[in-house]
Structures are given as C-alpha cells and as structure tokens.
Image 1 (spheres, rainbow, N blue to C red):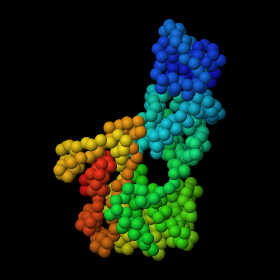
Image 2: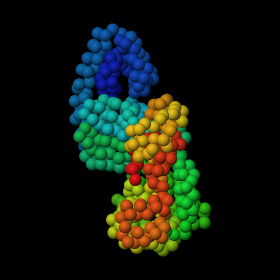
Image 3: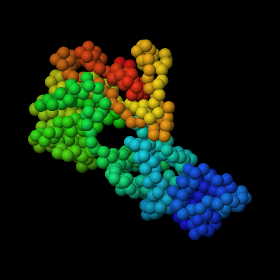
Image 4: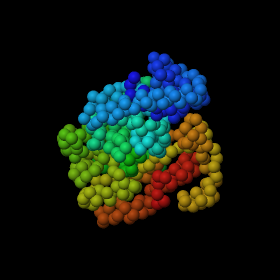
Length: 482
C-alpha cells in the first residue's frame, strides 16, 4: 500500500474519527462512529477512490484501527524521511505519480479555476499546507492540508512543470499546460525555498480566452475616445502604468487588436508572451541566452516594424532604444511600474533619460487599477456612511445610494464578482512638454494635467461608486486621494 495512502489515513481520516479496516484497500470499507459531513466524505472518496464505502461502527473499534494504522505507518515514515533526501529524485517521482496525489493536485487546480482565479498559492506552514488562490485580485483560502502531504504535492507540481524535483534549495521557474474541458490553460510556475518547505505559485493564463477589446475594459467614454484617437498616431511612445496585476498587458493587447488592420507590421517583445495574437510577430524574452528586452528591441528595429510593443521598460538601455524608436517614426507601446500617469515621466528621468527626449517622444501615459465589481446577483442598496464619505473625501449628499453585495453562491459569498478598470489618461500637451523639459517633478506634471482636464484614478473610481459598480472599500484599497 502506497505511503501516501497511509499518510492520508492517519492525518486526514483519524482527525475525522474515520478508520479503514485492516484489509484496506482489498476491503474498501471506512468505519465511523458519527456520519461525517457530506463534504468530508466527498474529499475522502476523491483521495482514495470512489469505490470506498462508509459503515457505522463502535468508538473502541475505530480507536483500535487508528492505532493499528499509526503503528503500521511508523516504519514506512522513517523510510520516507531517508528516501526523501534531495539526492533521490526517483523516490520523489514515484511519490508525485501516486494516484491520490495526482487527484488532489488536479482537484485543487480545478477548484481554483472554478473560482476564476488568476493565481494558485501552495504555502507550507509548520503543521499544515495552506492552499490559497487570488480571485479578482484578493487572496481566498481554498484548502488546509496536513503538512505531511507537502513533499508529494510539491513534487507533483514540479514534475508537471518539468522542474528538477530533487532541487529544493534554489528557486525554479517552469510552465504547465493544463487542459480543462475545452479550455487550454498555460500556468507559469515559480518555486521558492522556505523554512517549512517550498512555496509554489502558479500564474494562470487562459489560452482559450484571448478576445480583448478596448470597448470591454470599462474605460469611461471621456477616456476611451481620446485614447482610441491617440493610438492611431504614426509615431511616438505610449506608456501604461500600474502595479503588477492591474491589467496593463490586457490594455496593451486590446490596443494592438484595435490598431491591427493588417496594413502595418507589428512586433512585440514580452516576458512572457501571455496570449498569442493573430497577425502580430511576438518575441519571448529569454535572459538565460542573452535575449533581454534591450537585445530583443535592437533586433526588432531591424525587422522594419511600424508598431512596437515592449512588455516592460526596466532599465536605461531599454528606455533609450524605445525612445529612439519613437523618435525615428515608430509607434511604441510599453509599461512601467508607477503609481500614477505623471509618475511614468519621472521614472524615465530616474532611468537617466534626458527631459528633452522624453518631452519629444512620449505622447501619452495612462495609469490603471482594477477594482472588484459588486455581484449583480446579490447586490442591494447601501447608504454611504459619514465615515466612508470622510475617508473618500466626498460630500455625503452627492452619494445618496451606493450598492453592496450581501454574498451568494455565485460570488462565493464575497459580495463581488469580476473586476473593472480604473483609468487616468495623461495626454502630453504643449504646456506639459514645457513642464517636462523644465525638469518638473510628478506633482508639477500632475497639477498641469488636472488643470487641463485630466480625470484622476480616484475621480474615475468615484464615478463607478456612484453608478453602483463598486464599493468604498475597494476604492480605498486601490487608489490614493489625489
């Protein structure tokens, strides 16, 4: 009998006061004193197979069987520790190929996918393996497993990602292609050594959901209209800014789809290529072989492109080549990690780019965030409180009614379902070029942009609050009061 079965018996079943008969699995009976919850029975059947049967028995009989299995487990567990050494990859591969482990990992992945999660986190602790996922930008707990199953689950994920199973001391990166029904999912895998075992994070990319339209991103008309007009320019640089997970890449893909009419050559350099776009040449960065953003960008400009998309500007060299490309007749799109649209300009200055080059090449910067939307199935009216109005810096009379989700099955009792974008578009006018050329900081650039009518992230968020689309908590979570 595989050690994973025994570990499951002692760690999971004994906790629920369930015991297998001595002849298990030939005799697939599990004994209980009190009928376990249906969810616990389903979990056990998932781990051990649907053939198991539950039967009522006396407490002393169950206690005797639990002792029997613990005693039987002890020598196997001693061997497990020895075999589980970093040098014995064959043992770990066997462990990762055990049927209950495969079922458990698949089950956890599918639970996360059912919640439309963007990431799955396996987080080892002293006594448990916590499994959480990121849903609409917020971490959600989905499972708490015994710490003893951590090596087998870690090995299974690493085996699927074609990583070195025996290497537990160094971080590793890999990919998993996972099929669920008609959906083809690409998962980026990252492992990180920790005190209680390897922390593993899976980033989920849905290859079957590649339709990205600017019109569906939630841009208000007063931003969408000038943005759609501006991206038709023959040359210049457009920067989209925001933290990781704020939808920058999605906006750029929607932008490329909008302007991809087939009469221009479009090339991208990305890390990684998240979605494959028809009619566009896409390059995947690979630093291990020297294909960095700057190296890829140098090659791109020799391929006679009209439009260039750079996944991210990270250093002076990449920024310099991007600006040079924008000044020599190319339309360049890229991203930066800054808090607002004005911050993109000062970030380029921090990278050592001359202000006159920035003012001459950049035609627009756009900051964005994602906020969770109130669930449309359980939403109800919620009056804004004086405390919320004070925190938001608004007049209570201007917000007579807001909406909030009370929680239902469709939104996993969170009150939220899906996300919508917040946007701040800074168009570089002649006045702003003068401010930038004069070395103006982010505050000076922002003040001039607001004076010219720029809508800030916070003001865009407040409009969505007034329309019942989101909540005060979400606005305070992702925007600043500027």
